[in-house]
Image (tube, rainbow, N blue to C red; front, side, top):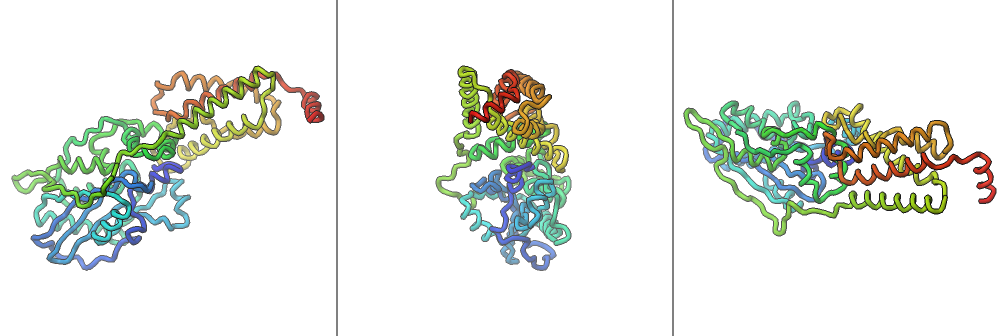
Length: 413
């Protein structure tokens, strides 16, 4: 899902990485049963500054002072040192794994990242705590710990919920909370408020599957929403039904922490600057009678073409399912790369004018239907679409340059 450069951000989203000591810690022999003093908690780590931590994190803590156990079970671990990490990431082959680390070591790591930690102690019987502990121990075995990471549907947050359900079965029930009443894309927006380039990358890479309304259960892919789901869940023992969470504690707080910090939306500002420069450049050429130059237009087309080629890769080649049916390809044509090359090499080539007319007409079409498309397009894209349309239309209407004029211009130069 992380689909792209930002998908890389998206892919690292909830991992603790090597900061916690890398792979899974060696596990002691499994005790037959947790003691009466034991506790199991769902731990929520709030978002941090590193890109991979922008969505927060969820994990399970097993604490049994009688047996010297205090472990954090973390499904968000990945091996960034893998030399093939980037190709695998681009293709969508993301292997995450369950690691087990001492809880206090994890707390120190999160403190270094300046990330608050909130703990929900679960209201489980001794038998239920033991069942969940054994499930986690089994999942942490080398042959079981790896899984295919799918950001929206199978990640380190949903795995926490799944482990609880696998251990307790129908005894644990998640209701209709949270009710986000939003799409996947809209749920991501607040987390990317401080990372404008990541926000732009998300909106470019994610297709219409990300614009579907999220169900309460699907919202569990984000730790904040899993936290709310746990707070409203119930667990049954015999004929007794009680709240799943017995108590909630802020285990670690960071003074001055701000989870909702926003940054200047410079990609959108840059897009409008490109449009203003395009208008000024085109206006100057129109008033002075100058013919359009090739280099600026070729650069604009090439950049847009590269974006289109990446989107095609994510849709047709990678294994991501949320990067399909991407309406950004209405304006980001990968063929613009070829058009840029032709413009530099043979600006009077047959068919180029027709291609530019089609580009200009399509740009107008996209701009007019901006609020009607089934996919939310980033605000930074709108002025770029207009810039491409203006330059393509202006060049298509400009008089042809004859070979004699080109030769005379070269001699004059």
